[in-house]
Length: 88
Image 1 (cartoon, one colour):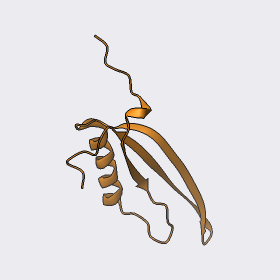
Image 2 (cartoon, helix red, strand yellow):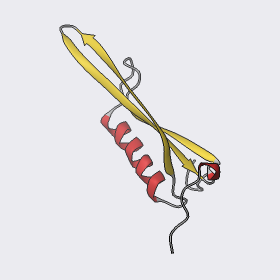
Image 3 (cartoon, rainbow, N blue to C red):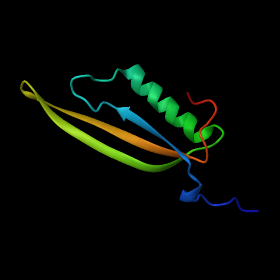
Image 4 (cartoon, rainbow, N blue to C red):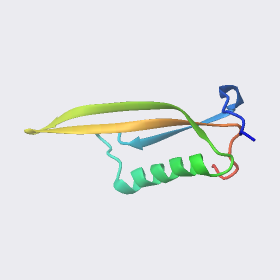
C-alpha cells in the first residue's frame, strides 16, 4: 500500500537551518557548520520526519587584499506536522 503523499497543508511547524556563513564579519567555524548539518540530517531522519519545503541560496564575493573570496550559505526550511519533542 502506498504511503500518503506529503501535503503542504500538513505543515504546522517550520525550522529554519542555516548552513554556512552569512556575515563576513563573523565567520562560522567548521564545527558550527558541522553542527548545523547534523541538525538538518536529524530533522530529515528522526521522528516526526521533516520535509524540506524551501531552500535559500546566497553567496558573496569579497575582496581581501589582492584575493577574491567567495562566501556562500544555504538556509533550509524544514516543515513538520508538529514541533519535534527533541527540538529545544
